[in-house]
Amino acid sequence: MSSPKRQRVTPSLRQDFPVSTSYKKPPKSVIIAGRTLPINRDILDLLFNWMAERDRIRRRRVVGQSPPWTKNKIMQTNKFCNVFRDHDRGTQYMISEVINKGDRSFKETCFRVILYNCFKRESTWEALVAGLGPLKWSTFKYRAYGAVLATHHQGGQVPLYTAAYQIPPPGYGHAVHYKNHLEAVETMMKDGLPRKLLAATSMKDMFELVCQYRGIGQFIGYQ
Image: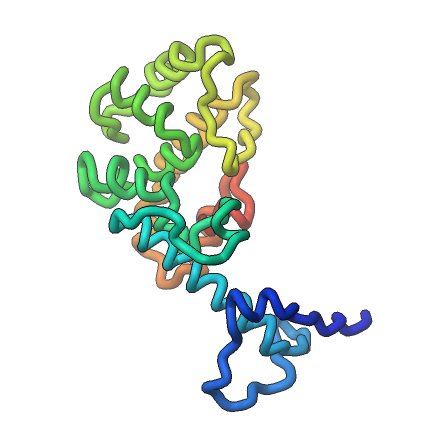
């Protein structure tokens, strides 16, 4: 395999995100997963300066400053993901409405997080809460949850899932996706996943535990 071509940073990009000159000359390459990769300081500086500016935009917006929150024309007119996943709207909702509301025991918190992440849609979570009250594993009934989702879904007229990313429907044999996901949640909880996560000694162990279940690939497992 040929080495990647050295990319050039254009003058306009340098002006928007000037590179740093305050550190010593970096090594010419780095070894990652057994591969030797060339280091381009200009590209790395561009990346990390862009990340810093993207987070400055978020902080300026959060404290109530008026737009534009940056002088960069591209970032003024285009949407970019937050630098940290915790700052995404969906994750902020999960922290405030899913994790920090309800029974705070580890088992019940795990149940709510797993259930929410199957759909990752605020309106779906709110429909379940409105139809069933506090969502708890100790009172979970597959048919009751399915009935609420069916009513809310309105024969496919109302979306149950976010468009950001979706967990593929696990192959439990149901014709509709949400029934497969409900069975996946039930399977994880009956299998003692919260207890196994507590006993794990590393994030790697937790990741491998989650990835053992149907429909959970590496990307979703890490999330």
